[in-house]
Length: 270
Length: 270
Image (cartoon, rainbow over all chains, first blue to last red; front, side):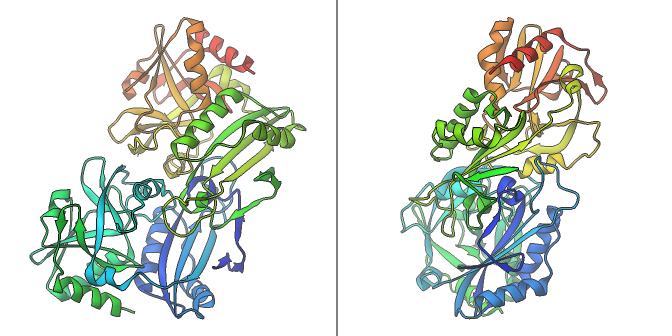
Protein backbone atom coordinates (compact mmCIF):
# COMPACT_ATOMS: atom_id res chain seq x y z
CA UNK A 1 0.00 0.00 0.00
CA UNK A 2 1.18 3.51 -0.80
CA UNK A 3 -0.02 6.45 1.28
CA UNK A 4 0.11 10.23 1.00
CA UNK A 5 -0.65 12.19 4.14
CA UNK A 6 -1.40 15.80 3.30
CA UNK A 7 0.46 15.16 0.08
CA UNK A 8 3.59 13.64 1.59
CA UNK A 9 4.55 9.97 1.58
CA UNK A 10 4.06 8.51 5.03
CA UNK A 11 2.18 5.97 7.05
CA UNK A 12 1.47 7.76 10.30
CA UNK A 13 -1.00 10.30 11.60
CA UNK A 14 -0.94 12.26 14.84
CA UNK A 15 -2.34 10.48 17.87
CA UNK A 16 -4.11 13.79 18.55
CA UNK A 17 -5.96 13.72 15.25
CA UNK A 18 -9.70 14.13 15.72
CA UNK A 19 -10.22 11.35 13.21
CA UNK A 20 -8.50 9.01 15.61
CA UNK A 21 -10.04 10.36 18.82
CA UNK A 22 -13.60 11.05 17.72
CA UNK A 23 -14.05 9.67 14.22
CA UNK A 24 -14.44 13.32 13.26
CA UNK A 25 -14.13 13.00 9.49
CA UNK A 26 -15.40 11.43 6.28
CA UNK A 27 -14.02 9.00 3.71
CA UNK A 28 -14.55 7.42 0.30
CA UNK A 29 -13.43 4.07 -1.03
CA UNK A 30 -13.00 3.85 -4.78
CA UNK A 31 -11.62 1.83 -7.67
CA UNK A 32 -8.66 3.05 -9.65
CA UNK A 33 -8.23 1.84 -13.22
CA UNK A 34 -4.64 2.62 -14.21
CA UNK A 35 -4.71 5.43 -11.70
CA UNK A 36 -8.02 6.89 -12.86
CA UNK A 37 -10.74 6.86 -10.21
CA UNK A 38 -13.86 5.12 -11.44
CA UNK A 39 -17.07 7.10 -10.97
CA UNK A 40 -15.04 10.12 -9.97
CA UNK A 41 -17.72 12.68 -10.74
CA UNK A 42 -20.08 11.02 -8.27
CA UNK A 43 -17.34 10.24 -5.77
CA UNK A 44 -16.05 13.76 -5.54
CA UNK A 45 -19.53 15.28 -5.37
CA UNK A 46 -20.41 12.96 -2.51
CA UNK A 47 -17.13 13.63 -0.69
CA UNK A 48 -17.72 17.37 -0.92
CA UNK A 49 -21.33 16.94 0.22
CA UNK A 50 -20.42 14.79 3.20
CA UNK A 51 -17.57 17.10 4.21
CA UNK A 52 -19.91 20.09 4.14
CA UNK A 53 -22.39 18.22 6.35
CA UNK A 54 -19.64 18.00 9.00
CA UNK A 55 -18.42 21.57 8.29
CA UNK A 56 -15.17 20.30 6.77
CA UNK A 57 -13.64 21.84 3.69
CA UNK A 58 -13.26 19.35 0.85
CA UNK A 59 -9.78 19.12 -0.71
CA UNK A 60 -9.32 20.58 -4.16
CA UNK A 61 -10.56 18.16 -6.81
CA UNK A 62 -7.47 18.33 -9.02
CA UNK A 63 -5.20 17.84 -6.02
CA UNK A 64 -6.99 14.60 -5.17
CA UNK A 65 -6.90 13.42 -8.78
CA UNK A 66 -3.16 14.09 -8.93
CA UNK A 67 -2.54 12.18 -5.72
CA UNK A 68 -4.66 9.21 -6.82
CA UNK A 69 -2.88 9.11 -10.16
CA UNK A 70 0.56 9.38 -8.54
CA UNK A 71 -0.12 6.39 -6.30
CA UNK A 72 -2.21 4.30 -8.66
CA UNK A 73 -0.93 4.70 -12.21
CA UNK A 74 1.38 1.68 -12.11
CA UNK A 75 -1.52 -0.64 -11.20
CA UNK A 76 -4.01 -2.01 -13.69
CA UNK A 77 -6.58 -2.06 -10.91
CA UNK A 78 -6.36 -0.70 -7.39
CA UNK A 79 -8.45 0.24 -4.39
CA UNK A 80 -8.07 3.78 -3.15
CA UNK A 81 -9.29 5.33 0.04
CA UNK A 82 -9.57 9.02 0.75
CA UNK A 83 -9.93 10.04 4.40
CA UNK A 84 -10.55 13.63 5.45
CA UNK A 85 -10.54 14.56 9.14
CA UNK A 86 -10.77 17.75 11.18
CA UNK A 87 -7.07 17.35 12.00
CA UNK A 88 -5.27 17.50 15.30
CA UNK A 89 -6.89 19.51 18.02
CA UNK A 90 -6.84 20.31 21.70
CA UNK A 91 -8.71 18.12 24.17
CA UNK A 92 -12.46 18.38 24.02
CA UNK A 93 -15.26 17.86 21.55
CA UNK A 94 -15.63 21.49 20.44
CA UNK A 95 -14.55 22.00 16.83
CA UNK A 96 -11.27 23.95 16.77
CA UNK A 97 -11.63 27.38 15.21
CA UNK A 98 -8.55 27.10 13.02
CA UNK A 99 -7.96 23.38 12.61
CA UNK A 100 -5.97 22.23 9.60
CA UNK A 101 -7.68 19.16 8.21
CA UNK A 102 -5.85 15.89 7.62
CA UNK A 103 -6.07 14.33 4.14
CA UNK A 104 -5.02 10.73 3.62
CA UNK A 105 -4.95 9.11 0.22
CA UNK A 106 -3.99 5.44 0.15
CA UNK A 107 -3.82 3.01 -2.75
CA UNK A 108 -3.41 -0.78 -2.86
CA UNK A 109 -3.24 -2.99 -5.95
CA UNK A 110 -6.38 -5.11 -6.27
CA UNK A 111 -7.49 -8.18 -8.13
CA UNK A 112 -11.15 -7.32 -8.10
CA UNK A 113 -13.98 -9.44 -6.72
CA UNK A 114 -14.80 -12.79 -8.34
CA UNK A 115 -16.68 -12.06 -11.56
CA UNK A 116 -19.44 -14.51 -10.71
CA UNK A 117 -20.58 -12.28 -7.85
CA UNK A 118 -21.69 -9.75 -10.41
CA UNK A 119 -22.87 -12.26 -13.00
CA UNK A 120 -24.55 -14.92 -10.88
CA UNK A 121 -25.33 -12.89 -7.80
CA UNK A 122 -24.37 -13.25 -4.16
CA UNK A 123 -25.72 -14.66 -0.92
CA UNK A 124 -26.74 -12.31 1.86
CA UNK A 125 -27.96 -12.74 5.42
CA UNK A 126 -29.88 -10.61 7.90
CA UNK A 127 -27.81 -9.01 10.64
CA UNK A 128 -29.11 -9.01 14.18
CA UNK A 129 -27.74 -5.55 14.91
CA UNK A 130 -30.29 -2.81 14.32
CA UNK A 131 -28.88 0.46 13.05
CA UNK A 132 -29.48 3.54 15.14
CA UNK A 133 -31.44 6.54 13.92
CA UNK A 134 -29.55 9.82 13.67
CA UNK A 135 -30.72 12.29 11.02
CA UNK A 136 -27.76 14.60 11.75
CA UNK A 137 -25.38 11.93 10.42
CA UNK A 138 -27.63 10.05 8.02
CA UNK A 139 -26.23 9.37 4.56
CA UNK A 140 -22.74 10.57 5.48
CA UNK A 141 -19.79 8.22 4.95
CA UNK A 142 -18.22 9.33 8.23
CA UNK A 143 -15.57 7.68 10.39
CA UNK A 144 -17.94 6.48 13.14
CA UNK A 145 -18.25 2.96 11.81
CA UNK A 146 -18.62 0.80 14.93
CA UNK A 147 -22.08 -0.32 13.87
CA UNK A 148 -20.64 -1.59 10.59
CA UNK A 149 -17.83 -3.34 12.47
CA UNK A 150 -20.25 -5.06 14.86
CA UNK A 151 -22.61 -6.04 12.05
CA UNK A 152 -19.80 -7.46 9.91
CA UNK A 153 -18.53 -9.47 12.89
CA UNK A 154 -21.77 -11.42 13.08
CA UNK A 155 -20.68 -13.96 10.47
CA UNK A 156 -17.49 -15.39 9.04
CA UNK A 157 -18.89 -17.88 6.52
CA UNK A 158 -17.10 -16.94 3.28
CA UNK A 159 -20.09 -18.21 1.29
CA UNK A 160 -22.06 -15.19 2.58
CA UNK A 161 -20.97 -12.01 0.85
CA UNK A 162 -23.04 -9.40 2.66
CA UNK A 163 -25.21 -8.79 5.71
CA UNK A 164 -28.35 -6.68 5.48
CA UNK A 165 -29.40 -4.28 8.19
CA UNK A 166 -32.69 -3.05 9.55
CA UNK A 167 -32.86 -0.03 11.84
CA UNK A 168 -34.19 0.35 15.37
CA UNK A 169 -37.67 0.90 13.96
CA UNK A 170 -37.45 -2.19 11.75
CA UNK A 171 -36.98 -0.46 8.39
CA UNK A 172 -34.57 -1.82 5.81
CA UNK A 173 -31.50 0.43 5.47
CA UNK A 174 -28.46 -1.08 3.74
CA UNK A 175 -25.78 -3.76 3.78
CA UNK A 176 -22.71 -3.56 6.00
CA UNK A 177 -20.70 -2.23 3.03
CA UNK A 178 -23.31 -1.60 0.35
CA UNK A 179 -26.57 0.05 -0.56
CA UNK A 180 -29.53 -2.19 -1.26
CA UNK A 181 -32.24 -1.97 -3.94
CA UNK A 182 -35.19 -3.92 -5.20
CA UNK A 183 -37.04 -4.11 -8.47
CA UNK A 184 -40.82 -4.19 -8.52
CA UNK A 185 -42.13 -3.99 -12.08
CA UNK A 186 -40.55 -0.82 -13.50
CA UNK A 187 -39.84 0.63 -10.10
CA UNK A 188 -36.35 0.61 -8.63
CA UNK A 189 -36.87 1.06 -4.89
CA UNK A 190 -34.22 1.82 -2.31
CA UNK A 191 -34.37 2.88 1.36
CA UNK A 192 -34.47 6.58 2.12
CA UNK A 193 -31.24 7.55 3.88
CA UNK A 194 -32.61 10.50 5.84
CA UNK A 195 -32.32 8.84 9.26
CA UNK A 196 -29.32 6.50 8.92
CA UNK A 197 -27.28 4.66 6.31
CA UNK A 198 -24.44 5.62 4.01
CA UNK A 199 -25.08 7.10 0.60
CA UNK A 200 -22.67 5.48 -1.85
CA UNK A 201 -21.51 6.99 -5.12
CA UNK A 202 -23.10 4.19 -7.16
CA UNK A 203 -26.43 5.03 -5.54
CA UNK A 204 -26.09 8.56 -6.91
CA UNK A 205 -25.19 7.17 -10.34
CA UNK A 206 -28.33 5.04 -10.29
CA UNK A 207 -30.40 8.08 -9.32
CA UNK A 208 -29.08 9.83 -12.39
CA UNK A 209 -29.23 6.93 -14.85
CA UNK A 210 -31.97 4.39 -14.28
CA UNK A 211 -34.51 6.34 -16.30
CA UNK A 212 -32.50 5.26 -19.37
CA UNK A 213 -33.61 1.72 -18.56
CA UNK A 214 -37.26 2.62 -18.26
CA UNK A 215 -36.99 2.45 -14.48
CA UNK A 216 -38.30 4.88 -11.92
CA UNK A 217 -35.90 5.57 -9.01
CA UNK A 218 -37.87 5.71 -5.76
CA UNK A 219 -36.53 6.37 -2.26
CA UNK A 220 -38.93 4.99 0.29
CA UNK A 221 -39.21 3.36 3.69
CA UNK A 222 -39.05 -0.35 2.97
CA UNK A 223 -39.73 -3.45 5.02
CA UNK A 224 -37.66 -6.60 4.98
CA UNK A 225 -40.75 -8.19 3.41
CA UNK A 226 -40.61 -5.73 0.50
CA UNK A 227 -37.19 -7.11 -0.33
CA UNK A 228 -38.34 -10.72 -0.06
CA UNK A 229 -41.32 -10.02 -2.31
CA UNK A 230 -39.32 -8.14 -4.95
CA UNK A 231 -38.89 -9.37 -8.55
CA UNK A 232 -35.15 -8.86 -8.14
CA UNK A 233 -32.82 -7.28 -5.63
CA UNK A 234 -29.26 -6.05 -5.68
CA UNK A 235 -26.42 -4.40 -3.80
CA UNK A 236 -24.04 -1.68 -4.87
CA UNK A 237 -20.81 -0.05 -3.85
CA UNK A 238 -17.85 1.41 -5.68
CA UNK A 239 -15.81 -1.77 -5.54
CA UNK A 240 -18.51 -4.35 -6.33
CA UNK A 241 -20.41 -2.16 -8.77
CA UNK A 242 -23.71 -4.05 -8.81
CA UNK A 243 -24.13 -7.48 -7.27
CA UNK A 244 -27.52 -9.12 -7.83
CA UNK A 245 -28.90 -10.88 -4.78
CA UNK A 246 -29.14 -14.58 -5.61
CA UNK A 247 -30.09 -15.78 -2.15
CA UNK A 248 -31.25 -14.30 1.15
CA UNK A 249 -32.11 -16.98 3.68
CA UNK A 250 -34.74 -19.16 1.97
CA UNK A 251 -35.46 -16.66 -0.77
CA UNK A 252 -33.77 -17.41 -4.08
CA UNK A 253 -33.92 -15.05 -7.05
CA UNK A 254 -33.39 -16.08 -10.65
CA UNK A 255 -31.03 -13.93 -12.74
CA UNK A 256 -32.59 -10.71 -14.05
CA UNK A 257 -31.62 -9.58 -17.58
CA UNK A 258 -32.62 -6.04 -16.66
CA UNK A 259 -30.24 -6.06 -13.71
CA UNK A 260 -27.44 -7.36 -15.91
CA UNK A 261 -28.08 -4.58 -18.42
CA UNK A 262 -27.92 -2.03 -15.62
CA UNK A 263 -24.75 -3.60 -14.26
CA UNK A 264 -23.06 -3.56 -17.66
CA UNK A 265 -23.94 0.09 -18.17
CA UNK A 266 -22.44 0.93 -14.79
CA UNK A 267 -19.25 -0.98 -15.63
CA UNK A 268 -18.93 1.06 -18.84
CA UNK A 269 -19.19 4.31 -16.92
CA UNK A 270 -15.95 6.27 -16.87
CA UNK B 1 1.87 16.70 26.19
CA UNK B 2 3.78 13.44 26.60
CA UNK B 3 2.62 10.31 24.81
CA UNK B 4 3.43 6.62 24.98
CA UNK B 5 2.27 4.50 22.08
CA UNK B 6 2.36 0.83 23.01
CA UNK B 7 4.82 1.83 25.68
CA UNK B 8 7.18 3.83 23.48
CA UNK B 9 7.50 7.61 23.33
CA UNK B 10 5.92 8.87 20.14
CA UNK B 11 3.21 11.04 18.68
CA UNK B 12 2.03 9.09 15.68
CA UNK B 13 -0.22 6.14 14.96
CA UNK B 14 -0.63 4.14 11.78
CA UNK B 15 -3.01 5.60 9.22
CA UNK B 16 -4.31 2.03 8.91
CA UNK B 17 -5.27 1.84 12.60
CA UNK B 18 -8.89 0.82 13.04
CA UNK B 19 -9.23 3.50 15.66
CA UNK B 20 -8.58 6.05 12.95
CA UNK B 21 -10.61 4.42 10.20
CA UNK B 22 -13.63 3.15 12.13
CA UNK B 23 -13.43 4.52 15.65
CA UNK B 24 -12.95 0.87 16.61
CA UNK B 25 -11.79 1.31 20.19
CA UNK B 26 -12.47 2.72 23.65
CA UNK B 27 -10.94 5.40 25.86
CA UNK B 28 -10.87 6.94 29.32
CA UNK B 29 -10.02 10.46 30.40
CA UNK B 30 -8.74 10.82 33.93
CA UNK B 31 -7.04 13.11 36.43
CA UNK B 32 -3.51 12.45 37.62
CA UNK B 33 -2.43 13.76 40.99
CA UNK B 34 1.38 13.61 41.06
CA UNK B 35 1.15 10.78 38.58
CA UNK B 36 -1.47 8.81 40.49
CA UNK B 37 -4.72 8.34 38.60
CA UNK B 38 -7.69 9.57 40.58
CA UNK B 39 -10.54 7.08 40.89
CA UNK B 40 -8.34 4.40 39.35
CA UNK B 41 -10.30 1.45 40.69
CA UNK B 42 -13.43 2.66 38.93
CA UNK B 43 -11.56 3.83 35.85
CA UNK B 44 -9.80 0.55 35.22
CA UNK B 45 -12.91 -1.53 35.89
CA UNK B 46 -14.83 0.56 33.39
CA UNK B 47 -12.04 0.41 30.79
CA UNK B 48 -11.92 -3.38 31.09
CA UNK B 49 -15.71 -3.58 30.88
CA UNK B 50 -15.94 -1.37 27.80
CA UNK B 51 -13.07 -3.19 26.08
CA UNK B 52 -14.79 -6.53 26.65
CA UNK B 53 -18.01 -5.16 25.15
CA UNK B 54 -16.08 -4.54 21.92
CA UNK B 55 -14.14 -7.82 22.22
CA UNK B 56 -10.88 -6.01 22.94
CA UNK B 57 -8.40 -7.20 25.50
CA UNK B 58 -7.75 -4.61 28.22
CA UNK B 59 -4.09 -3.78 28.89
CA UNK B 60 -2.57 -5.07 32.10
CA UNK B 61 -3.51 -2.81 35.01
CA UNK B 62 0.01 -2.43 36.40
CA UNK B 63 1.37 -1.64 32.94
CA UNK B 64 -1.10 1.24 32.62
CA UNK B 65 -0.32 2.49 36.12
CA UNK B 66 3.39 2.46 35.33
CA UNK B 67 2.88 4.38 32.10
CA UNK B 68 0.63 6.97 33.75
CA UNK B 69 3.14 7.45 36.56
CA UNK B 70 6.06 7.73 34.13
CA UNK B 71 4.37 10.50 32.20
CA UNK B 72 2.60 12.26 35.04
CA UNK B 73 4.75 12.17 38.15
CA UNK B 74 6.43 15.53 37.55
CA UNK B 75 3.06 17.30 37.44
CA UNK B 76 1.08 18.29 40.50
CA UNK B 77 -2.07 17.86 38.44
CA UNK B 78 -2.52 16.47 34.93
CA UNK B 79 -5.08 15.13 32.50
CA UNK B 80 -4.43 11.67 31.15
CA UNK B 81 -6.12 9.89 28.31
CA UNK B 82 -5.96 6.18 27.62
CA UNK B 83 -7.01 5.05 24.15
CA UNK B 84 -7.26 1.38 23.21
CA UNK B 85 -7.99 0.39 19.62
CA UNK B 86 -8.20 -2.84 17.63
CA UNK B 87 -4.94 -1.85 15.93
CA UNK B 88 -4.00 -1.76 12.28
CA UNK B 89 -5.88 -4.07 10.00
CA UNK B 90 -6.59 -4.94 6.41
CA UNK B 91 -9.35 -3.14 4.51
CA UNK B 92 -12.86 -4.03 5.58
CA UNK B 93 -15.01 -3.93 8.68
CA UNK B 94 -14.48 -7.54 9.77
CA UNK B 95 -12.48 -7.78 12.98
CA UNK B 96 -8.99 -9.15 12.21
CA UNK B 97 -8.40 -12.56 13.74
CA UNK B 98 -4.97 -11.72 15.11
CA UNK B 99 -4.92 -7.95 15.43
CA UNK B 100 -2.47 -6.42 17.89
CA UNK B 101 -4.29 -3.64 19.71
CA UNK B 102 -2.94 -0.11 19.91
CA UNK B 103 -2.55 1.47 23.36
CA UNK B 104 -2.02 5.20 23.67
CA UNK B 105 -1.40 6.88 27.01
CA UNK B 106 -1.07 10.66 26.90
CA UNK B 107 -0.61 13.15 29.72
CA UNK B 108 -0.81 16.96 29.81
CA UNK B 109 -0.28 19.21 32.81
CA UNK B 110 -3.55 20.79 33.94
CA UNK B 111 -4.66 23.67 36.09
CA UNK B 112 -8.02 22.20 36.94
CA UNK B 113 -11.40 23.80 36.34
CA UNK B 114 -12.34 26.99 38.20
CA UNK B 115 -13.23 26.02 41.75
CA UNK B 116 -16.48 27.96 41.66
CA UNK B 117 -17.91 25.51 39.11
CA UNK B 118 -17.92 22.88 41.83
CA UNK B 119 -18.82 25.22 44.68
CA UNK B 120 -21.39 27.52 43.10
CA UNK B 121 -22.56 25.33 40.26
CA UNK B 122 -22.60 25.75 36.50
CA UNK B 123 -24.91 26.86 33.72
CA UNK B 124 -26.17 24.30 31.22
CA UNK B 125 -28.29 24.44 28.08
CA UNK B 126 -30.37 21.98 26.10
CA UNK B 127 -28.81 20.69 22.91
CA UNK B 128 -30.91 20.40 19.78
CA UNK B 129 -29.22 17.21 18.67
CA UNK B 130 -31.04 14.09 19.81
CA UNK B 131 -28.84 11.12 20.65
CA UNK B 132 -29.41 7.94 18.68
CA UNK B 133 -30.48 4.68 20.30
CA UNK B 134 -28.05 1.77 20.00
CA UNK B 135 -28.12 -0.82 22.80
CA UNK B 136 -25.08 -2.60 21.32
CA UNK B 137 -22.93 0.46 22.08
CA UNK B 138 -24.81 1.98 25.01
CA UNK B 139 -22.73 2.96 28.01
CA UNK B 140 -19.41 2.35 26.25
CA UNK B 141 -16.87 5.17 26.08
CA UNK B 142 -15.99 4.28 22.49
CA UNK B 143 -14.27 6.29 19.79
CA UNK B 144 -17.41 7.01 17.74
CA UNK B 145 -17.98 10.47 19.16
CA UNK B 146 -19.45 12.46 16.29
CA UNK B 147 -22.68 13.02 18.17
CA UNK B 148 -20.71 14.57 21.04
CA UNK B 149 -18.78 16.73 18.56
CA UNK B 150 -21.97 17.97 16.88
CA UNK B 151 -23.70 18.61 20.19
CA UNK B 152 -20.73 20.51 21.60
CA UNK B 153 -20.57 22.64 18.46
CA UNK B 154 -24.06 24.02 19.11
CA UNK B 155 -22.79 26.76 21.43
CA UNK B 156 -19.63 28.73 22.05
CA UNK B 157 -20.76 31.00 24.87
CA UNK B 158 -18.09 30.46 27.57
CA UNK B 159 -20.68 31.24 30.25
CA UNK B 160 -22.36 27.92 29.44
CA UNK B 161 -20.36 24.98 30.76
CA UNK B 162 -22.36 22.04 29.46
CA UNK B 163 -25.08 21.00 27.03
CA UNK B 164 -27.66 18.40 27.98
CA UNK B 165 -28.94 15.81 25.57
CA UNK B 166 -32.20 14.02 25.04
CA UNK B 167 -32.44 10.99 22.80
CA UNK B 168 -34.50 10.31 19.69
CA UNK B 169 -37.39 9.20 21.89
CA UNK B 170 -37.15 12.32 24.05
CA UNK B 171 -35.60 10.77 27.17
CA UNK B 172 -32.88 12.57 29.09
CA UNK B 173 -29.49 10.87 28.63
CA UNK B 174 -26.41 12.91 29.59
CA UNK B 175 -24.32 16.00 28.94
CA UNK B 176 -21.88 16.27 26.03
CA UNK B 177 -19.01 15.33 28.39
CA UNK B 178 -20.75 14.36 31.63
CA UNK B 179 -23.36 12.20 33.27
CA UNK B 180 -26.41 13.92 34.72
CA UNK B 181 -28.29 13.30 37.98
CA UNK B 182 -31.11 14.77 39.96
CA UNK B 183 -32.11 14.70 43.61
CA UNK B 184 -35.73 14.16 44.58
CA UNK B 185 -36.06 13.82 48.34
CA UNK B 186 -33.68 11.00 49.28
CA UNK B 187 -33.60 9.61 45.77
CA UNK B 188 -30.63 10.18 43.48
CA UNK B 189 -31.96 9.58 39.98
CA UNK B 190 -29.94 9.21 36.79
CA UNK B 191 -30.82 8.06 33.27
CA UNK B 192 -30.45 4.39 32.47
CA UNK B 193 -27.65 3.93 29.96
CA UNK B 194 -28.95 0.77 28.33
CA UNK B 195 -29.80 2.35 24.98
CA UNK B 196 -27.24 5.17 24.63
CA UNK B 197 -24.95 7.40 26.67
CA UNK B 198 -21.52 6.97 28.19
CA UNK B 199 -21.05 5.48 31.64
CA UNK B 200 -18.42 7.53 33.45
CA UNK B 201 -16.25 6.29 36.31
CA UNK B 202 -17.74 8.83 38.73
CA UNK B 203 -21.17 7.43 37.96
CA UNK B 204 -19.93 4.03 39.14
CA UNK B 205 -18.45 5.62 42.26
CA UNK B 206 -21.82 7.19 43.02
CA UNK B 207 -23.53 3.84 42.53
CA UNK B 208 -21.22 2.39 45.17
CA UNK B 209 -21.24 5.28 47.63
CA UNK B 210 -24.43 7.32 47.80
CA UNK B 211 -26.04 5.02 50.35
CA UNK B 212 -23.55 6.48 52.86
CA UNK B 213 -25.40 9.77 52.42
CA UNK B 214 -28.80 8.25 52.98
CA UNK B 215 -29.49 8.39 49.27
CA UNK B 216 -30.96 5.71 47.06
CA UNK B 217 -29.26 5.38 43.64
CA UNK B 218 -31.92 4.84 40.97
CA UNK B 219 -31.39 4.35 37.23
CA UNK B 220 -34.55 5.24 35.39
CA UNK B 221 -35.92 6.72 32.19
CA UNK B 222 -36.21 10.42 32.93
CA UNK B 223 -37.88 13.33 31.17
CA UNK B 224 -36.43 16.79 30.77
CA UNK B 225 -39.26 17.86 33.09
CA UNK B 226 -38.00 15.53 35.82
CA UNK B 227 -34.78 17.48 35.81
CA UNK B 228 -36.52 20.84 35.90
CA UNK B 229 -38.71 19.70 38.80
CA UNK B 230 -35.83 18.25 40.84
CA UNK B 231 -34.74 19.59 44.23
CA UNK B 232 -31.18 19.71 42.91
CA UNK B 233 -29.32 18.49 39.87
CA UNK B 234 -25.69 17.88 39.01
CA UNK B 235 -23.17 16.68 36.46
CA UNK B 236 -20.17 14.41 36.86
CA UNK B 237 -17.07 13.33 35.04
CA UNK B 238 -13.55 12.43 36.07
CA UNK B 239 -12.16 15.91 35.49
CA UNK B 240 -14.98 18.01 36.96
CA UNK B 241 -15.83 15.59 39.75
CA UNK B 242 -19.28 16.89 40.63
CA UNK B 243 -20.65 20.17 39.33
CA UNK B 244 -24.01 21.24 40.74
CA UNK B 245 -26.38 22.66 38.16
CA UNK B 246 -27.01 26.29 39.09
CA UNK B 247 -28.96 27.25 35.99
CA UNK B 248 -30.63 25.53 33.06
CA UNK B 249 -32.54 27.98 30.88
CA UNK B 250 -34.98 29.74 33.21
CA UNK B 251 -34.59 27.20 36.00
CA UNK B 252 -32.28 28.28 38.81
CA UNK B 253 -31.29 25.99 41.67
CA UNK B 254 -30.08 27.18 45.05
CA UNK B 255 -26.97 25.48 46.47
CA UNK B 256 -27.60 22.10 48.05
CA UNK B 257 -25.62 21.21 51.22
CA UNK B 258 -26.21 17.53 50.48
CA UNK B 259 -24.65 17.88 47.05
CA UNK B 260 -21.65 19.68 48.53
CA UNK B 261 -21.20 16.88 51.04
CA UNK B 262 -21.30 14.34 48.24
CA UNK B 263 -18.87 16.41 46.18
CA UNK B 264 -16.41 16.71 49.07
CA UNK B 265 -16.53 12.98 49.70
CA UNK B 266 -15.78 12.34 46.04
CA UNK B 267 -12.85 14.76 46.12
CA UNK B 268 -11.42 12.88 49.10
CA UNK B 269 -11.58 9.60 47.23
CA UNK B 270 -8.17 8.20 46.33
